[in-house]
Image (cartoon, rainbow, N blue to C red; front, side, top):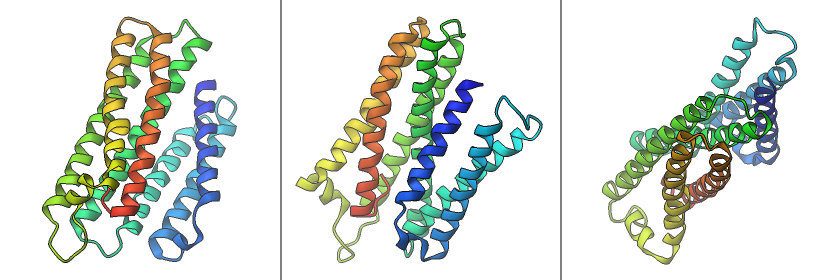
Length: 238
């Protein structure tokens, strides 16, 4: 129960920080307001879950979790629609896929890291729990790589002269260093580290797996921050 309370508390803190740092101008249009409302609902549901887990409301706790997850998904979708205002359906769909795969990768990496640390608290836990979450993390990594590859291909293939700078030219310019850092730290690094984590989890070396997951989570965060910077700079959801 403490593991779930910790994760719920961490999620509540991160969402509260996001709400506090949210730019006011993002709430001036429909999708921005929808995202804000959905994120607020998700925050309230997570706080209720954190307060109740292991204590009360056991019968309605699945509904609380469903509310938090559903509201979070609505917030992600609304934010994706907000940042693609005026763009075509392909880029809007690709941005939605990018945001969802980004959330899955970040969430999987963070949860795996926390679970790995939990083996230091409760060494008798079955290692199969860590193996399963690492599998999910690796699967989200594969999906994220596929989405980024598709987004880059779409940006290059759909560019026409006179409609702005080419993304192909961007990645080969000096400014493209951010893209290559994103690929190195946010995709290649976590891909290798998640595989190493899986190998150490298979031999039940939970301490080694936890150490690798700390580095893995850091590289994922760096990569996703760079991805959002590139989105703002080029409007390509990598």
